[in-house]
Image (cartoon, rainbow, N blue to C red; front, side, top):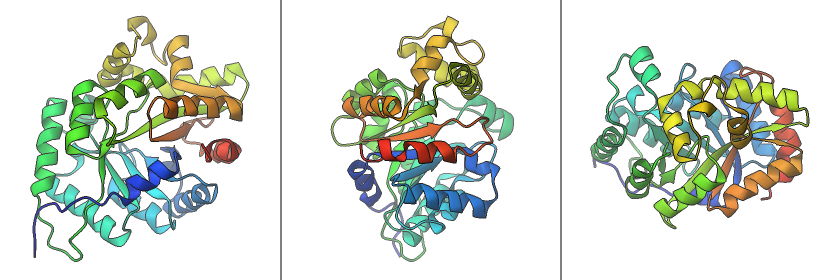
Length: 309
């Protein structure tokens, strides 16, 4: 039986290009697995083309992907992002290819280097130089054995990429990039670095509502953890923000730039600005009342306005 990584199946990537809006959420970790599958099925029925989720303190990325794939029929499921420190390359390769075999053409594996507090504080690993460490991991993935049937297909992969060197790596050793917490101007620059071929899938936080105080509150809790993480602060600096924007929960300017809010048409216009700037697919992260509230009302409210973009 052959070993090593076969050619990656781009069916899921093609599906994201064909239908350009999906969902990103961490909130499904707050409900039982069977309920998470029910929400995933509703997201699919609403017309969203993809469903992405994080990996940090909750469910493990690939078992979670399996649960969501099993609860749906056609929607693309993406790990957004699976940490390369969470499993060695042999296990990472086997996990992706096992799900690809069971649910062909429906998985995109997003890989990322995560953050120092999680890697060193939670997992107990040394945090290496991000680009070099990612390159070594992807090389190891490509050389890892997989002695299970069927063994002739691997899922596509994208990288959590914000700055030029990681975006360049996403263009050469992956099938694209998934930038997070970025402006449409960043999307335009990312497309130039990636070139025409690789997938550019962009996350965009949203709040469907007209109450400015509620917008402030939700944007604050959303940005609170990220304003303390060096990787995002460095990314924001390249996007034109500075130290005065990085206080706990972010400045007003940072909130307005990172969270689209208002009516259905307002949010659709912001999503369109990413698409016009070169994104192939935009995944909206609707902000609930808290991080633990599933924002199903917002997914429903936005579906008609955004799923046809």
